[in-house]
Length: 174
Length: 350
Image (spheres, rainbow over the protein chains, first blue to last red):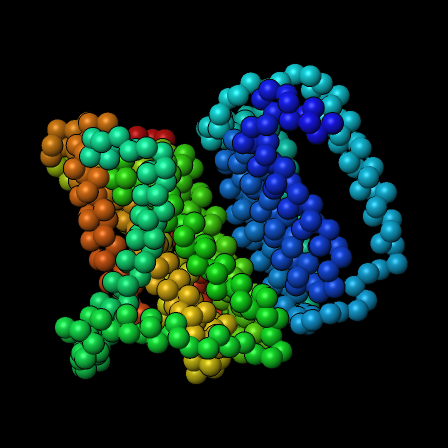
C-alpha cells in the first residue's frame, strides 16, 4: 500500500510530506492533551495542536486563516485558558481526579465525527482535484464576509456579545 | 532576491536571510542596551556608567554576556523543570518570528508576506505564553503573580495596538508592510511630494497609541507592574539566572528594537526616502543601492524610537495595576476605535 502510494506521481511532494509530519505531531499532541495528568501540560499540548492547524492552513495556501488561527487561538484563547487555570488551580506535578466517569464516551463520539466528516468530504469532492490557485487574496475574503456571509457574520458577533454580557453578570454580584 | 544586481542562488539567499535575521534581532538589542540602558540612564542619573571595559565601557556588554554564560543553570527544586527551561526560548522565538516580516529595502526582505501587519500582531502575542508558563513553572507565588499580571497587561494593550495599526492599513490600502512603505514614500501632502507622506502626520493619534501600547507590551516602566521589584522581587523572572535570564534579557531589548522597526515602517516611512527625490515612481524603479542604504535608514529610525521608549522608561513612575487596566480599556481603546472610524470615513470621502 505504502509503496503504491509513493509511486503515484504528484503524491510524494513536499506539501504532502510536510502534511504527514505535522499531522503526526498533531495526533501525538492531541493524545497527550487527554492523557497527561497535569492541567497546564494539557493546555500546552493543546497549543501544539492549534499551532499544527495553523501550519496546515499555510500548507493549504490559506495565509489569512492561518494567522487568524494563531492570533485568536494561541494568542488569545490559550492565554485565557492558562490564565484561568493558573488563577484557580495551578498545581505543579501530577494531579488526581482529572478524569470524569464518562471519559470513555468520548471515543465513539470522536469516531462518529471522523466518519461523518470523512464521508462529507469524500462525497462532496470525490475525484475532483482542486486547481492550484495560490494564496487567496485578503480582499476576496473580506468581500465574501461583507456580502453573502454578512448575516451569519453579524449573528456570530451577537453570540460573542451575549457571552460578554453573561460574563459580566456572573462576575458582578451587586 | 536580486541584491546589488547579482543573482544569488537559493541556498545563498536562505543563508543570507538567516544571518540577516540574527543581525536584525541581536544588533538592535546590543545597541539599545549599551547606548540607552548603560549610558543614557547613567547620564540621566548624573553618573558615568560602565567605563572600564573597552573605550567608554563599550565592551561591557561582552563582559556581561560572558559572565551570564558561565553561570550554573539553576532551577528551583519544586519547579516544573521541562517547562521552566522552555519558557525563555518561547519568548525569544516570538521575537525572531516577528522580525521576519520587516522590509529593510526594495529587495532586502526576509519574506514579502501579503498580510504582514496581521502576521506581526499575531506572533507578537506568542511571547505572552512564554511569560505565563515561566511564571507558573517557577513554583513561586511572586513569579506566578508576575506572570498573571504580565498576561493581563499584554492582552489589554494588544487591542489598542491592533486598532492603531488599523488606521495605517486603511490609509495605505494594504496589509503588506512593503506596500505600506511604498505608499508613504510615493504619497504627497496637499500636492507637495518632496517629503512623501509619512503616516505620523495623518495618523498621529494612531502613532501615539501604538507607542504607548508598545511600551506596555515590552513591560517597560511606567508599565512594569509584572516585574515590579518592590512588590514581586522580579516577577516571572525571579527564579531565572545564568543564560536563561540572559535569553529573557536579550528578548526584552530585541523586542523593543523590533517593535521600533515595525513602528518606523508603519508611521515613519520605513526604509524609503521620498521617491520624488530620485524620480522613482514605484518600487521597481528604486535603485539597488537602496538595499544597503535601507537598513541604515531603518536602524537610525529604530534608534530614535527606542530612545523615546527608554526616555519614557527612565522618567515616569510606575502605574498602579488598576490604573494600568483602566487606561487601556477606558481611554486607549475608545480613542483607537474613534481614530479608526474617522480614518475610514475620510478614506471613503476623499
